[in-house]
Length: 214
Image 1 (cartoon, one colour):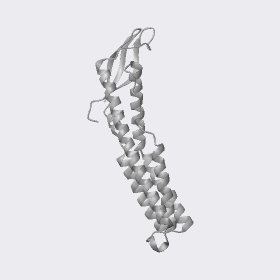
Image 2: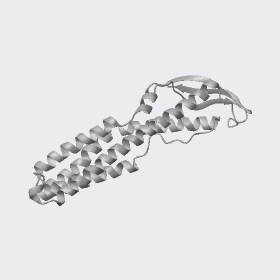
Image 3: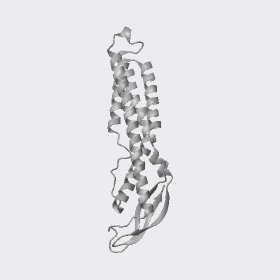
Image 4: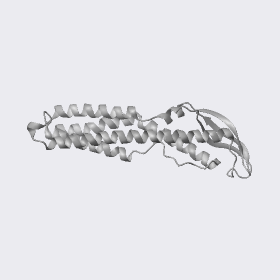
């Protein structure tokens, strides 16, 4: 994310019978489009690495806890069978959630036309929204609520409130670490937005377009 980014936020002020004809992108707009798409591709690689790493770690934790739960009581240390199974299920579900987490940077290379230019900006805007959502207050509350459900089950059903409390603290800490390490480069680009006017030229119309530089 070391480059200069420019994103166009549509709209505008077109004059003529039609504003939807083919237009000519300026050199600045072409450069902006390429930079935005390179940015999205970079963020997608980072997001996939983040998802794979955490999904793999959680799957490994689930397998280990399930294995420990099947061992004889005198060989598995202080952890109870119930707490180990609850931990294994919690880790397994969390691992699976990474497989269905959408990437904030999904994009196909668009043709270098005005329509492709607008599509790249929509992809950028979508990516920014998803990255902001991934670090929102709601996400933090979800982490707490998710781990609280398992803690309440372990305490209420098996009477192991101490283990439940410890497990919840560990689970929340891991969840917060996941949020902290989630890529958010697109969000930082959006936070640096500026607006300007740029000419819009087409075969059948002309006018001005509102441009946002990031």
